[in-house]
Length: 71
Image (cartoon, helix red, strand yellow):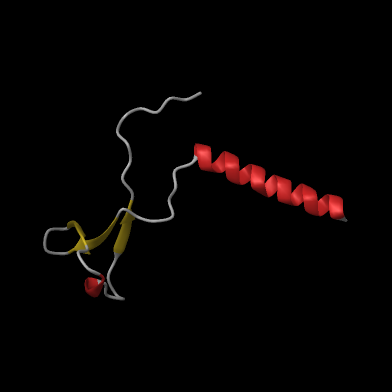
């Protein structure tokens, strides 16, 4: 039984180490955008006071435009 627990903990820690090196951290968005009917486009939400429950929002993440090295 203890071997299963140790194997699970080791697998979990190994996956956390490898995932942090290969994947982009998407936990917090860089910008929150709201659909604007006037211009038919996405506009940034300036404050949390503007967030409405019936509106459509988009969580935006900034990406590096330089090509990444694949090793």
